[in-house]
Every structure is written in structure tokens, then in C-alpha cells.
Image (cartoon, rainbow, N blue to C red; front, side, top):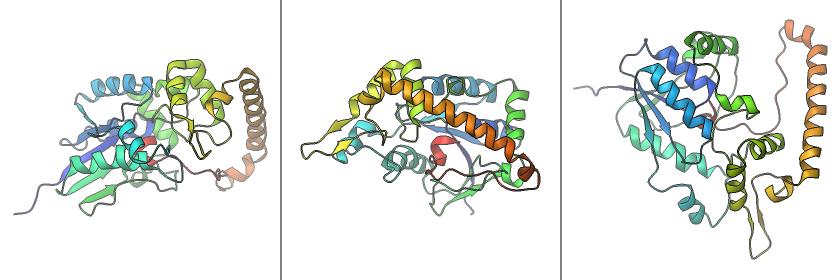
Length: 268
């Protein structure tokens, strides 16, 4: 007897996985929606997922790793996760997801769009087959926006104050300007992130941001400088976009940042 194949969509609280959940809702009746909850997510992420659940008319299963962030931080000797050492994604996102899946055959729906050409942290268990409906159906950024607008749910609310992706409030992929905005919007979460930073007995610094510790970043003169630099870079970006418009029309790709990208299971 062949095993039953489960259909699972892992959500992050981001726009793409939310749009995909809405897109698949009437296409796969037996689909399961799950969210790997680190208990360190943005306040708006929890609020948004509650709204999404109502729109879907189906429960989003919250997966919690039995050993949370603080436990694994102790295991790693106080080494904070980083783009080079993403233990948070592996142990707080992928591990609970794979335990929930078990050994049954599973189709995992991933919200990569048709206009994206990237890979990231997704499960490689042999019983899990990843599929990419947006890529298969040619749905790009504009298509995702249309799904969210037509449904009435709209964009994730953290985008309004400048956070570019979902995930933990102390996500190391945040730019300096996003840390500033977290400080201004959710000072209690900024302060909680700051408490994780430390200097070890051998003088090694454990910080979320490569340029500043958060205690340095929050100083008024540094906040002002970060805002100034960001405003200048945005002006330059807009100028470059205007200058390159003809090239883009002719089919060239947008420039990609050299910085590592946030993990798919956290960001989409």
C-alpha cells in the first residue's frame, strides 16, 4: 500500500508565503499550514499570522522547538548566530519543521516568485519534495501584490516602519537602518536584543551587527549618521534606477547585493 502524501506550506509571516497560502487555499484542499515559532518574532508577525489564519479559514499550526533560542545559545557557548553560522535557522526553523513532517512523503510548497533566481535554507530530507507554484505559474512580484490586495489582507504591517522581511526581532540580516527603526518602533525588543550582546573573557565580541554593538548603534550621533547615510543611498539608488531604466526594459537583470540573503524559511 502506498503512503499518503501530505501537502505542507511553511509560513514565515512574510508577503510571499502569505500570498502562496492564499493562492493554494482552493487548489489543494488537504494542505497544512505551519509556522515555526521561535518566540522571538516581530510583534507584527504574530498579529499578521492571526489575520491570515482568519482569511484562510484554517488553523496555522504553530511549531515550537522544545529547546528554544536561549537553550541553543548556551549550547553554542554564547556565540550568536550569523550569516556564516545560521544555527538559529537550522535548529529553530528547519528542525521543528522536519520533526513535524516525520518520514511520510510530503510536498512542501515554497513561495519563491517567478522573478527570483536564488536558493536558500529549505529542507533536504529525501521524503520532502519542494515545489514552487509561483515559478511554475509565472507569478512575479506584481502578481504577489495582486493576490494580497485582492484578498483584502494587504502587506505585512512591519513593512510600514521599514523592516524588509519577517523573522526574529534580532535577525542579523537587518541593516543598520532597520535596527534604528526597531529602536524607534519597538524599543523593548531592541533592548532585549541588546542584552544578548557581550564581550567574552578572551575579548571576543558577540554582536548582531558587524559595524556596531547595539549599545553603540543607539547613540544619538550614530542614529543620525545611519539615517543620513541611508537617505543618501536611497537617493543614489533612485538615480541609478532612472539611469538604468532603458537597460531593464531591454531585459537586463537588477543588480544583486553582495550581502548574503536571509534564509528562505524565515523570510518568504
